[in-house]
Image 1 (spheres, rainbow, N blue to C red):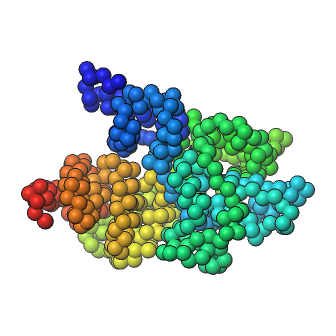
Image 2: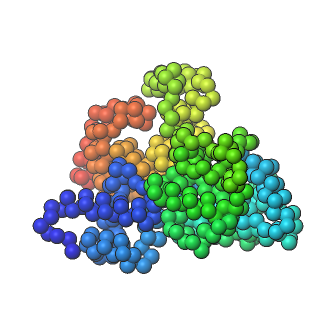
Image 3: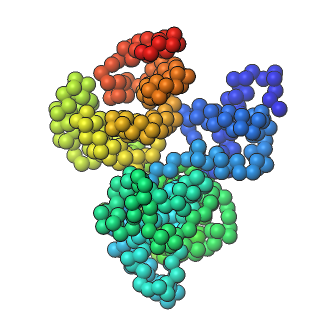
Length: 478
Ligand SMILES: C[S@@+](CC[C@H](N)C(=O)[O-])C[C@H]1O[C@@H](n2cnc3c(N)ncnc32)[C@H](O)[C@@H]1O
């Protein structure tokens, strides 16, 4: 039971730390300090749901005595960002190099087993199924296409196979016409494809020896999932995948992830403008190993801009603040291709497109950033701005919430959430979000204020919030 003698704040911090440790141990998911408030809110919510005090809940959670509890937590703790044909160059490599090699190697057994690990809502596995449909040499082949995830909600959506046009944003027209039928305000996948795949609730952080049998898979897609795991969980998941991959099997990671310093069991392959791994057979020379310099990481997203590029981006930002949008865009365009892909440059470019009213372009740039770092709060924020500008307020709200959750020091999403709450007549949420904005504005980063403050500085924004909050408390519409 909660010790009444313990100060509530200390107990809460302790409880949150324990909650975080249990989540890491059980699900493998690692959360930085800046996400403690999100964990605290989730813990509070689960305590209220179970009507338990923190200690009883955490004891039961740790001993696995709350049936279905980790499945209930998973949707709150994971990021299911995905879409069809994501990083299409990987699918080109698959179609033209990897699958022909595997089909040739398996021509006697006529069996091919493909896994999408961390499949989210299924777009990746269905894309694999589409590619396979073109290549399968005959009906006597036994093709397994399996998607696994620890979030039961995304698996339900995957099985339903009903998608919005946003999930199809990178889908070639021919594939859209061939595999999708319009349904309501979205699309549903052809039955042939739905019947070709299976989805299973599997946690990559669990040993599950029956699942990870040696040689169980010929090809594993584990894109944008290992990056969420703590070091031990990551090593465990990688060891299980490696063990279950056939000796000549292939592993695909996310665009900006690598196995450097993590495994010597693979040869790094580079074709079609992309990287992927082939499991190394034991007699292959060590020189063929993947280079060993950095772990699975979003290296591209994290790499700092070159000094001269950083100066240019800074100049472009100043021009943006002065509303010299064309000049700012010209500076960014003068950067080399790599520098233009730096996160700061991408966000600024997206804001420039937004100012021109080119929402789809702005959103694409933000999504490019998310493919490298799905937790990039500013990218979610830019998408929210785009959605709000086009009147899709429900989607905007979700993205603002996500931005605020991913970076708990980010004030501006809360300002928009306050406005959205006011528009829908939710006075409580309006006041709450304004108060939150005010509290966070105090320490909001100057860079973000320059980008997203709409020309207002910290003090002006604080004054606006105070006035609006005072009027809201007095019950007046601002
Ligand atoms: C960003 S999505 C990646 C989707 C897809 N692979 C792609 O790249 O488009 C990450 C997915 O990994 C899943 N995930 C995270 N930790 C996991 C774990 N320990 N076991 C299984 N799935 C996990 C999440 O639930 C989420 O759906």
